[in-house]
Image 1: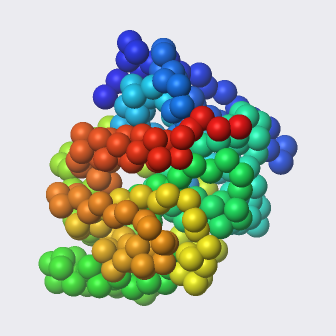
Image 2: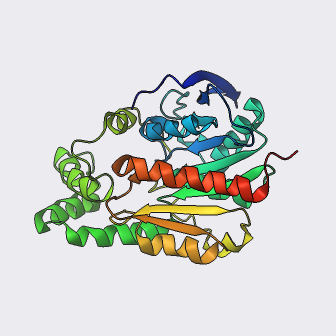
Length: 298
């Protein structure tokens, strides 16, 4: 999919945040439709930049702006090397800074994987101007996600399982043998396309943060707070997702009135694996929310 098509245009730039620069991209339709609020997209990782979300730019063709940014530490944003800088609170403040600086008072908020965790944190802070929440491939409990992901390894060939466990026990995960074995896991439960789309390989070539999932977010768990969420919520996940249906079920049970669409031919990247249906499901949800709520509002 081309980054820029005839009916859209894009603006890129930086905002200042805690003495650093955070990069953003706004994709705009040439004709914005009245009442269609912007869609702000949060990438995953932590530290896998926005590039792999490129198919979501198609949402702009429906008449709304689509906003991406690279979280501090990766992609086109500054990459401070002090690991102590990175925290969930930092990324929550960064999201607020993006909204305030770019003046997005009313939005739909989309988060994929870790981006969904960040979207949950923002939503739980009860911000103003949040029309809806879309959680793609998102857990509510990182410990459950890790346990479920390890259980998925039982579906892999025995020799691959052995290699992965051997190197994780020995803390030698930089070994080429481990990386090769993890490719088997990733092509089963992260993205089942072969070869991977260029936007996904490009994102992984620009990973750069010191803030990784096995560290500071390992104890993150908002299961007991999900009942606080009152905005319309859409849950999206894949049948073969490393964020397993058991993980998404926690969100479905906890968020009153939430909708869940399971993509039968996808793993962790249904926006890449079943792009056309994904964009359609997302677009219809956004339009339905706006119709039901009577946007625009002051």
